[in-house]
Amino acid sequence: MSSIEPVPMPVWSGFLKPVLEVMADGKAWSRRDLFKSVCDHVGLNTEQLAEALSSGESRAENRIGWAVSALFKAELIEKPQRGTYLLNPAG
Image (cartoon, rainbow, N blue to C red):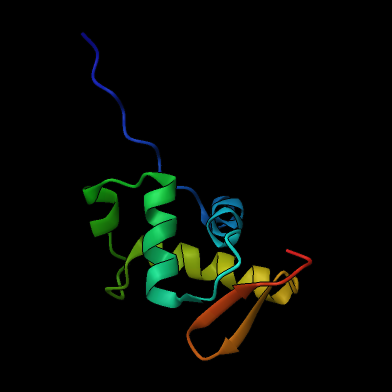
C-alpha cells in the first residue's frame, strides 16, 4: 500500500492561477480570506502552512503575496481599499 505524497508547495508563479480561480466569484476579498482560500484551493497541508522563512513570515503567504503583487502590476486585480482585492474584467 502506498502513501499519498503531499502536493509540493508551488513557487510564487504557481500561485497566479489559483489566486485568479479563487477570485473568479467576483467578490471583494480581504487579504486574510484570500490567502486562506488560496491555500485551501491549492491543497496545502499543515506542515506546508507552518513553513516559515528566516524572517518568520509564512512561506505560503509570502509566495501568495508575490503572486497577488504580480497580478496587480499586470492590472488583472484591483485594490479598492487597503488589504482588499477585487478581480477586474481583464482578470
